[in-house]
Length: 403
Ligand SMILES: Nc1ncnc2c1ncn2[C@@H]1O[C@H](COP(=O)(O)OP(=O)(O)OP(=O)(O)O)[C@@H](O)[C@H]1O
Ligand SMILES: [Mg+2]
Image (cartoon, rainbow, N blue to C red):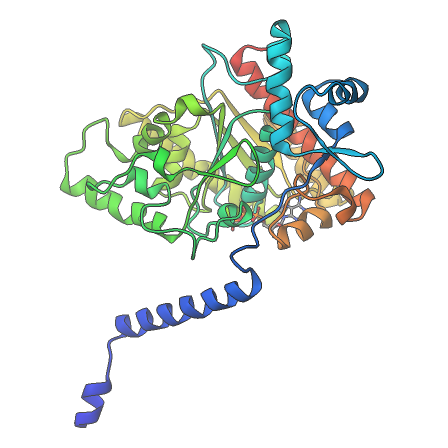
């Protein structure tokens, strides 16, 4: 028989776990305040005038002359006379040049024009650790550096993309601050525009993620049973409907999918105009990818029969963490190319300690100064990333009908 004392102190497991969660959250908050005081926000590199000139597409000499003439944004000039621009200033330069050379507007300000539809790229694969988040953030940042207006959407409850972009999912977000806020089924649904945040990376906005996104996986079966959903609010249209609210504000949306094939991923795949499937070229990963493709195609067929739009402008496989000198990897990459041909991007993202190390401090090679990591490693990694992202951008431009 239970003693009186036992009864009074016995607490149910849910209460106990909830207590643990609160304790942990409090401790983490304290730890975080020690490690990252509120004033320490993420910092972004500046661009030498050579880099800035290359980004906007003019010569270094021309840029220097502009600055001497006092035209366009004023760069910071160091004691040794080196001029450097912030990314905001690079974008100001784009506007300045586009306005002063109306015939070349598109060269300087590549925003989409009338008739060019918003491009939504879902980065997916249910294999965990296949570099979805890394691929997403490098693509989103690359496109922003090229002058596009980019929205990154973190659809993963683990929220790695959000933390890379300076948002701490456990601390910085309240209820409804993730995409879930805009796709939920009840009356607390909010406009997506209220949820989007600017990031420290000019031209790149974020819809953060955190565990709250899981609610969508739980609520959807209930909603399907309880309500006879009309075609307009059925689960696979909700991501697309939310994104349509901000269609005019962006050129490209990049969605980082979770490593599961749930309702969120399906919603992203339906909202997407194109798909990027990341592949780590190893036997186990490729075997699981084949399962992923089978399951995805089965589910997509169900969604299509239910009226979902599943036409994509392009589907591309991206080889990531590639070690070209590894024999088995080379065989797998060759196999993929022989099967899928041009649907496998010609460029691959090399496995690089520079990418992994920068990732540890939640940074990318696009936002740190070149001197911060060993130059040869940095240059090789960046070259492969630029090549991959350049190919994806070429696909986007092709969809827009640009040459
Ligand atoms: N090209 C690369 N070279 C070296 N390390 C890499 C590279 N790409 C990714 N990584 C590392 O591999 C790990 C997994 O990458 P990432 O988080 O992008 O995968 P993911 O598919 O998003 O994972 P998850 O399924 O958990 O969401 C990370 O630690 C990342 O830093
Ligand atoms: Mg991820």
